[in-house]
Length: 308
Ligand SMILES: Cc1ncc(COP(=O)(O)O)c(C=O)c1O
Image (cartoon, rainbow, N blue to C red; front, side, top):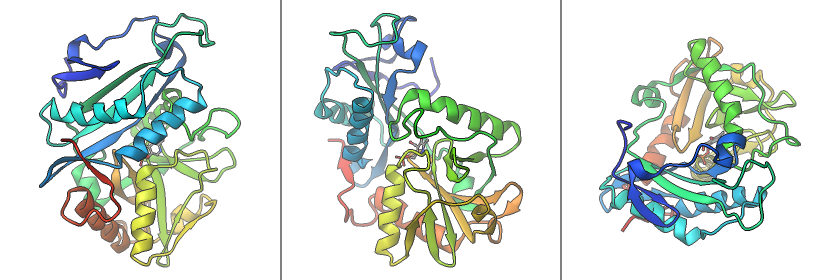
């Protein structure tokens, strides 16, 4: 059993023991990548564990399923309820929640068969900082990947689908093998897209820049949160196509994502970003973000959902 295994997994409406939540080797998703999923965080707060932007994540999950025309037997309410229960019934104070909707034992034909619904599961893992606690403070070393993100007329990146992560695997493994913590991929037009599992921001002359949804990226829920927080601080945020050289000239850079939260970028391709460590705007955004998600600041956007 995995070391971070929890007691229960929610599978098609039932809470069952972790070890019993298995699928058949002919599962469609295993062969063709036909699964859509979410990554959601529950934070420990003084009101107990609370889930960050649960509704937005479940909306995105069902949008991903809609794009692929998955036949569904579960509702948004079922999955939202499962996300809360997976935390409480496993006795977790915080955790990373993974809902997955996938085509299971529906036959090996690529086309979906009439009358065969997708399966659904929700599990949770007690995960901390994805790119390391140290990375959150000092920043990480990244490179520009030799792999491009998916072209818009190939596989839709607006859907968070399992198959998209073959691109992420190429990007993440290449950069790790070359000694970097993460990579930034370009889109099919050569503009900055995103990391293997994060959106990317850069700061130049006190203005924050990020790539548009059309740049082969997943429009992140943390990206949206950071844009709102920054604008409320009076910082200008510009969403525009970003040429590669912007990353070498930025004053500050950071990644955002459910797993990465807000992780500063210290250097790109061996060139320091600004002074080569976390910049003041990144730190200000991190402080506001962590105060909110940990319940230390007022939840003025209504982004937290209690698990009980
Ligand atoms: C490819 C990719 N881009 C961006 C993100 C960031 O999205 P979010 O902030 O919604 O987690 C993720 C993480 O889910 C991702 O996998």
